[in-house]
Image (cartoon, rainbow, N blue to C red; front, side):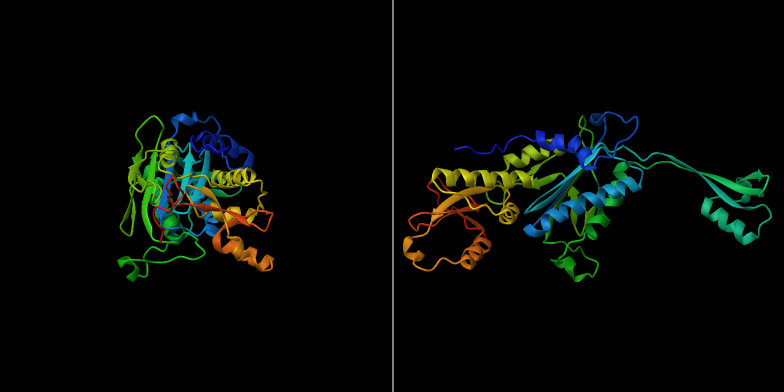
Length: 358
């Protein structure tokens, strides 16, 4: 039986660094350094289960909010990609400069001899302590006026990220959110779609050990530790950057990319149907939903006893079963209804459920 391979992250890297250009997500620099020499950001927000219907929008919002904040501060990156599973939102931003560029701005002030209030306002806005620090410029039409050159050294990107990320997380635009635990007694406590357990935030080039972006939200400090599948690989493990994050998750029974989870479910369901001489009734909306319910999809096939089929077949019953039990229908003969279900839970070799998920 053909099964989709779960190993490797070559496609994800290629989409991030090359394919984003076709979608307009790649913002390039003139005379840019090679991507390998530029630091990358890895961000993961690990929580209780995120409703499937919210995942795609949340991933897009995370990418937009972080990359827009970087560009506003003069940090133009090479590419970005966001991902969602039932328990995590992840973001990889590649090719970020180590620090902001220095800026030089020439600020025009009032005319020479202008009222003192105008002069004082100019000094305050330009950061000057006295008018003697300003330069007088002569203009044939406008006469003499003050100018000031304001030079601002760029800040280290690691410091900027510590300023950028907390307000984005605190104000994240979830359609529905909640507070929990002791901090929930405060009006300003974090609101998240479900309780937030951990944060990964690392920044650094591929050739060096990355730094942890230093910040904390309601007692959850950013670090480099995550967890795998809730049942199959629940132990915590350390990650450094995106290139080892994806294979580490795969080893811990988590398929990060939603499209890959959808492909696994669809192709395995087709294979099971074909092996039984049946035809899968495909439902794109249902596949989207199911891919948002599992991190390590496993497709199963089962059947109802014929005694339960002595009722008129009604589409309302079938649609209700699809949405309520998250399974796919198959065309059948001899009044035998077979179905393919998907699970994110462990089964033994005989197909028995090892542990019920609560």
